[in-house]
Length: 447
Ligand code: SF4
Ligand code: SF4
Image (tube, rainbow, N blue to C red; front, side, top):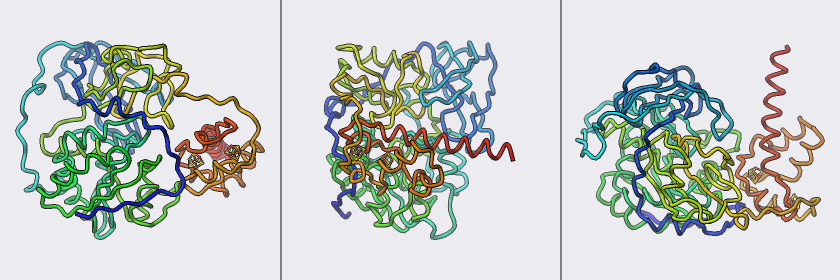
């Protein structure tokens, strides 16, 4: 196994605020008495509800069937009775139908040792079917259904299969805990994906604090039959961004607006890999995930294994609540996450973290005019000029802003983070993209 160190062009060094949560072993959160399960927990079309009010469901029963483009199945995280079918707004702003289940009856799987299946004798289409059946999606937040993303390509199309072991955001440490606690499952997941995708090379990329999980990973790789390289990167944000990672590993650039498959690469995040392993080896649907609960306002930060549909507020309570009133609560990471005010919102497959940040952590700088320091351009990992994009957006110069690469922006937030004038560049560019997309839709509708 090869160890390589490389460094990221652009990006920012963020304070290491992971320690308090990452050094504690993952613990099981309480089983929620009520689970609110959105049917849209992925990219693409929402799942179609297959239960009615009053239905009794077992743990792991299908409650949402995949329906339409890039849809994914949704399962009951707890056994019980469907008490309500409701509508809610997710932290990312999308509207979703949700199934509310009140806990009742027995768990059939919880606490039991599941019998592993020998997947090596299965054909690829059967393996894929199991990934689809389990409702596995990109658990780092992209939500792309895994049966779509990891469908066997034409021969030789995948040059690199990369396990993204660099945390996607500061504060988060759930990937690190999985790498530390379940390295052999991560490696077996890679063996499954190697079977499906037949890549020329397979790489495990570790970055920042996850580099200290290298020992266990190295042993797990040595015990497997797979040929896997280990690459280690500096702890610079956003090393865990797919585009940035692919460039670092392969030396091939791919524009932010294009999928990394254009560079012959396929990236899998750690939590998704473990979900693939559980789907294929145990036939287990995605009904729980590991969530980092952290931030200066949390009394007892940690990583919790949580049933989908548990409320954000319950998780904060499990971490002994707030030690001081938070300035804001964020779902996801501090750079790309969404601020929430309603703590009854549920954990979904895409909830990587819940952060309660203090005023000092938010470090809000009052906005002043641009001083032309160029820091945003130096920090942009996609090689863009954020300040230029910002100015073009202010002037509503749609063609110019598109030509200047607006859609290559991956919304990493480095430019906003580094700007001494406190200009919310990334947020502005994100809304510019939505504006242009909706203007294009309106234009199409009129023509
Ligand atoms: S948010 Fe966009 S423009 Fe800003 S640094 Fe990231 S990729 Fe570049
Ligand atoms: S970092 Fe801020 S102040 Fe500096 S050039 Fe960019 S927008 Fe202007």
